[in-house]
Every structure is written in structure tokens, then in C-alpha cells.
Length: 293
Image (cartoon, rainbow, N blue to C red; front, side):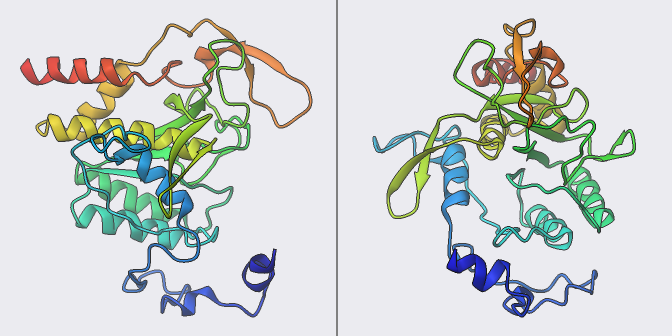
């Protein structure tokens, strides 16, 4: 609580001074520092572990991809997610060679959405896969948008964007994470995001829930495909991930996530564009077939 009073609720504290940024100057992109750890690196460490934890050291857990490097960019220092920072982080990642960008953050408002939209188009032009966590508000994002949002009105901005909902370990009515956002238009696919085991700082581990951890499941899969099949384009990788989804639960009646007290039932296939779950094995098989053909 002391941290919140000193920073979050302190109207005299200006975090932009730390990174030498003028928040009113949208054109200024030369700011920041190399401190990606800061006071709390736990969230980013957990996400990175899902993607790329060492698969061969016999310790802890295995990441999805075994031949990738993590480019750590702290776009959201401490809950203060600004459109300017998100846009510049995407551009920085693209300019420094990222093939896949994972975005495990989100918010309800986007006052400078045009800046992020421009960055999304830039990433698309450079053939980069963008993967974004759908959010943890138990909301239909077709009706209640979460930002960054890959739409201007009804039209998608970036054709290589994936939005990810969180699934649980239960192959029953509790399959979608009770906290997960969903949307037939705005969420592409679900991936494991409940009871996830991953890394923490200081050689520790933890179990956590969230679409923040479903997103790197998909980003890790995209990185895996790109590392083993480098000729695949970002568009092909997206299509492979979506086309290879597990659809065995499509007609399953599930509890539709809700922030209210009443539980509503619905078909799992109504909660995302594919109506399915990430299937890494089938994605690799389809990538192999795609490259051979």
C-alpha cells in the first residue's frame, strides 16, 4: 500500500521525469532507459518463461519455444499504460528485429489511439506477428473494447494480429477462464491461462491465472514456427495457428464469463472467431506441410 500512496495516488509524482519524456509531445520517441527490471519484474518474467524458459536444463518448467531470444521492452512501467509508450514500444521492437511481439497488457480507454493504430500498421508492413491478451474483465470485447484494439470501426487495422482468451484445465462448462474476456469478432482463439506455472525473479516459480499468460502461449507458438520454418510469413503463421485449433469443444455448453452474479450458458464456439483452443502440435504439423508444399 505504501507503494501505491507514494506513486499511484501521489498527484505530485511525475513518472515521466524518470525517463526524460514530455508526454505532451507525441512526436518525441527518444526517451526511456535500459532498466527493464525496475521495482517489480515478476509479470514480465512470468510471461517470458512461458515463451522461452530453457527446455534442456531439467529445472522448473519448459518454455514453448526452444530456439528464440526475448527482447525485453517495458512498455507499461507500473500500470500507467500510455498510448505513446505502447506505440513506441511496438515500433522499437519492429526496428530491432522482432518477428513476434507479445502484448500482455490492456486498458479501457485509448485517448491517443491513432498513435497505436499507426504503429500496428507499421508492424504489419514489416511482417511481424502481434499477439495481445484479450483482458481479464469477464466482458464481451465486441461490445466493451479493450485497448490496444485492432479495429477502426468494423475494419481490422493489422491483418497479422491475434487476440487471445484464456482457457482453464477443465474440459467442461468451466472451460473458459471465469475472468477471461471474449468476443466472436475481437477474440481469435483461446489458450491455457488458468493454473499456469512459470518463472519468477530470484530463481523462483509461481502459479498464476490471466489472459496475460494465454497470450504468450500463442506468441511462443508463433515464435516456435518462425524459428523452425523461417520462410513462413507472419500471415501464414497466423493462419496456421488459427486453422490448426482444437475444435473438439466447439459445441460444449459453457459458463459465459460474466462480472455479474448470474451465470449464463453458451456454446464455446461463440466466444471467439475460431471457437477453438490453441493446438501447438497441430500447428507444427500444418507448418511442416505448408513449407513442403
